[in-house]
Image (cartoon, rainbow, N blue to C red; front, side, top):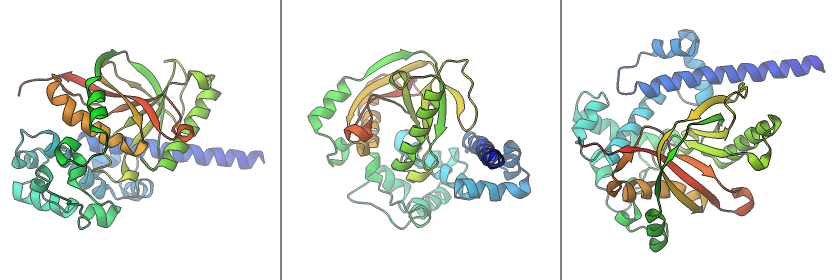
Length: 324
């Protein structure tokens, strides 16, 4: 029995170490998307041999290294087209390392099923099921999902209540928070998210952090309107004392200090991404700030499984708007 337990523990430890190494590889890719990426470099970062790295990456990520790089480049290009309206389509192509605007437009349409121009100027229902994102990942892409309801006239929130929420957004200084986090293995899929929270809450309790004192933050790295739900990165994070020992599969990190726009949210969980879109589309342009380079953070104030709705404070790191 002891032997069986040790064997199980060794298997869990090995799996955690493999995931930690692949995470280093994906972080390297994400940091170098605008540059040529040699697969040998990515393998070296993960400390796996080049010969075996591709198979291990595919087994853990559910897609090949090349597919991951292509997907992340397309997602970044879509984000730039939406959020960097001062950039031309050719500018976006050059930033992403494409040889020409024409080649970029062709690759973009092959992936999303719509052209860069369609994304910037959506008309009607452009829900596409012809691009690679649908054929490979099963995600129908709709440019209208990336725009405010004030632009599309597709009501998601009561207009008066939404305007009231946007008016109450505050900018606050936040001190650095030490955290331990666990990444949801299937992205934003609810069952995976809840299972991940159950694990890290049990871990926190075992570390002496009583359930009533647990401060829970979700760090959401991707936009599900662009990224397939199971490929989105969702980190369930617990605030901890800086000296607390953290071992795999949990990872020690910090939520950085700085200025954050703070918005209160209480509504259905499936509208959260729409709320972030409204915040970015309707509040930022008149705020004097722009988003800083850190993903949205959600501080949960209730248990959605018990209440049937999500109550939380949304934190978006900001910096002073700089003239370009």
